[in-house]
Length: 44
Length: 245
Image 1 (cartoon, one colour):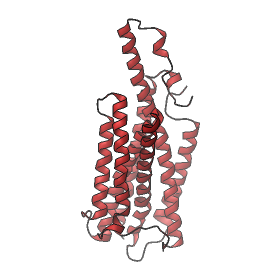
Image 2 (tube, each protein chain N blue to C red):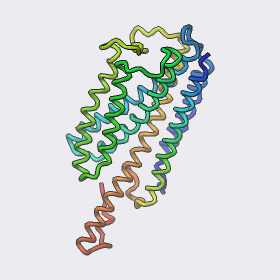
Image 3 (spheres, each protein chain N blue to C red):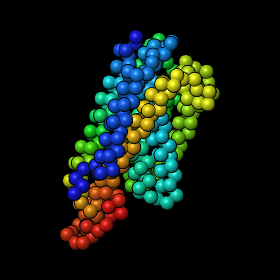
Image 4 (tube, rainbow over the protein chains, first blue to last red):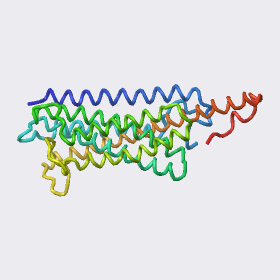
C-alpha cells in the first residue's frame, strides 16, 4: 500500500544524488587538467 | 598523478558508503515492517529523516567554517563552508521531495504552508542566496567575508526549522527521534542504518566538493598571478609557479 509514493521518493532522490555526485567528479576531472599537479590538492 | 578529485581515502569511503547504502535500502524497503497506520508509506521515513540530518549537518559545518574564516581568514574553512552549504542545499531538495511524497499518503496533501514546511522553504531559499552570493563577481576576500556573515546568520533559521514543530502547532508531526522514541526495534535499526549510510555519502561528497572548490581557487590564483606577471612585463618568470597556498 502506498508503494507508488515510496518508489517515486527513492527513485527521485537517488537519481538526483547520483547525478550530483557524477557532476562533481566530472567537474573535478575537468579542473584538474588545468591546474599544475603540485597545486591540485590542499594536502599534498 | 591526481587527475581526479578521488584518492585512496575517498575510494574506500565511497565503497563503504555504497555497501552501507545497499544494506540500508534492503532494510528500509524489504526487511523493516509496515507501520500500523501509515502502512508502507513509513518507508519514506528512512529517506526523509537522514536527508534532514545531512542538510542540518551541512549548514552547521557552513556556520562553523564561516566563524573560523572570520576569525583567521582561513581559505580552507571558507571553501569547506561553501562546499558544505551546497551539499546542505542539495539534501534540502531531497528532504522537500521526500517529505511531499510522504505527506500525500499520510496527510492527504503534498504541501501545506505549516510552520515546519514554511521555515524549511525559507531555509532552502536563504542557503540558495548564500550560494548565489559566493558566485558574485566581487574581490575574493570581500565575497568570502560577506558569505561568512550570511552563513552564520542563516543558521538561525535552521534552529527555527528544528524547533518549529515544538513552538507552533501545524500539520507536521513532532520529532520522530527523542528520549521517548517508540519505534519498533527493526524500524529503529533501519532508520539508524540509513542515517549512517547517508552520512557516509555526505562525507564522500563533501571531500570531493571541497577538492573541486580548491581547484577553482587555485585556477583563480594562477589567473591572477599570470595577469600580474603580464602587467609587470615578466610573463614566464618564476612567480607563476610559486606556491599558491
